[in-house]
Length: 355
Ligand SMILES: Cc1ncc(COP(=O)(O)O)c(C=O)c1O
Image 1 (cartoon, helix red, strand yellow):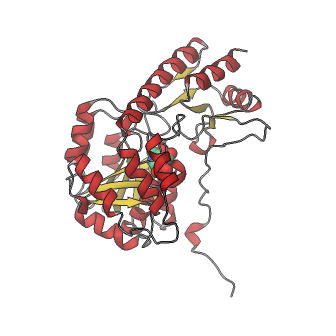
Image 2 (cartoon, helix red, strand yellow):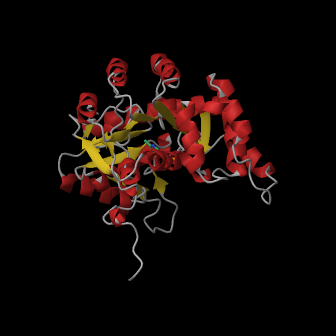
Image 3 (cartoon, rainbow, N blue to C red):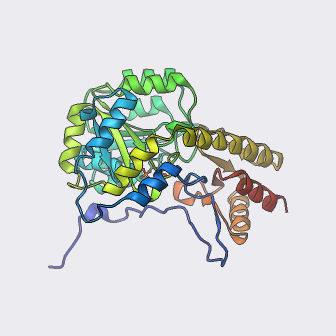
């Protein structure tokens, strides 16, 4: 007998992150991972500089951070869990709710971690085909059966930037079978302006079958510190506490997240930059005959028409030290994804593509 990992791990692809370097001597322009090009708030930098207790274990339940999130969003802190980035949350949910006899559902072009999280549990993966790069909510409903325990839905979606209309979401949620947990992954929610959207998130946070995932990695600019949070029904949150590690978020990340929450100006500046960048990149690339999908987040998906044209786009950027994201891992080889940078970075990309 030899050692053997669970057989369902065979064939699970590793998550392929966006590249941060092409090996050039000069620092690259990084537009590959939907990070905040402005960095993080000065208040966060101050909190990091003042951080002292590296030798102490962190607060295991991130109590202060949960209370502050609860105060801001008017939620009971008991219904909030903090996690090591929202990636950890996505996996904890699968671990808590899926077993090899169950199935988990996600969209054809949903975030790459969903199929990985589902397959890691040995459960069956059910992917719902998209229509014109749009999440097919009736397709989700139709695919659910007694084996379905978990459904992942990014709202807005990465990599398409698509935000399903609120009415459609309402209908979908009404049709949710009573045994299914719906994960609304709102990693990019701060880039959505519509107050109705945020009102609905507050409403759905009280739904017994919904968990809403949020992150500090995107607009708050804390991707390196690995901190996210989620709000959901007590039964879901209690199950997640059982499967998480005892010290899953670091004290430095908790302190940085608290500082980040205190800087509204930085958030507004980051939001405005994303909108300005999307408009600029969309106009310029459309003029160059690329099909740019409308995006409700801080990135754009560019349909280049053919794999050759997408590869040429990617290679030209890489050769000029601009890192963008190839879409092969998403089975969209004819597309590239570009995270919005500073206006200087966006202009540099456009000038390269025009040259
Ligand atoms: C839709 C979505 N969810 C979750 C994540 C994970 O974010 P993090 O683990 O950094 O919080 C990402 C990161 O790109 C994402 O695009």
